Amino acid sequence: MFRDLTSGRVVVGCGALASAGAAEAEGRPPQGVEPGGADRHPVCAEVGHPLGDAAAGDGLRVGRDLLAAAAGVAAGGGLGPAPPGAAPAPAGGGADRLGPGLARQRRCPGQKGGGATGPNPTDRGRAGTKRHLITDRRGIPLAFLLTGANVHDSVPFEELLDAVPPIGGKPGRPRQRPDKLHADKASDHRRCRRACHRRGIKPRIARRGVESGQRLGRHRWVVERTFAWMSRFRRLTIRYERRLDIHHAFTSLACSLICLNALQGRF
Image (tube, rainbow, N blue to C red; front, side):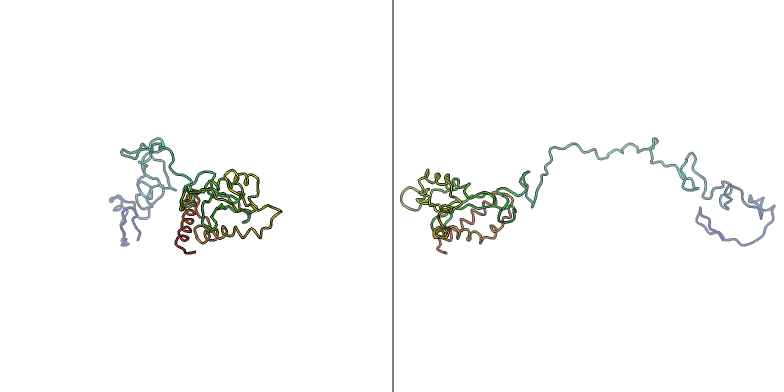
């Protein structure tokens, strides 16, 4: 039994014998004579190819088999023209609207650590922000400034004095300048003393190498307590905001809450 690969039929031989003349009359070779052709395959003996007629004018082969002509390939060996209705080529757009960002906020080039930051000398040079604060004798914040952690305390001294707003609440003109100013040894500079004298303020600044820092705590412990009040706000303990205006707003909100607690007599 053998299988006809061209039609998928199963042919069963019965083993009957016939004469050579009868076979020739029916157009088949006599018994004991092999079919003709190059490959001598029992199927399609006249063509001599095991799978059937080969495609004319084609030179593509897989092994010993001839393949049909490829109609989808263009005559030049490349791709043919695009079909009608295809999508056009994308046109050139305008300026790129994407920008570098970090933590879901856009940042400006050169400000990787945010505004008002600098290497902290007390924290192994990590980026940090310093708060400069001025309060009244009870520790109520009057003004503050934000700078890098490596900025000296005496640098924004004059700017901090001018940041105090006019304060009312008593009869007469609202006062903007205090009578005296207490500061530590970090502000022991001539320019700081001259800035106080120009504004009619009596400076009470500790002198380096002359006065002890122990007696100074009788007057400036109030500002240290205000720093402790501000540190109770979790948003100010560690600066998470890259933008300076957002961190400045949170610091202003903390000062407002301290003033509110003082007006309500909570401390």
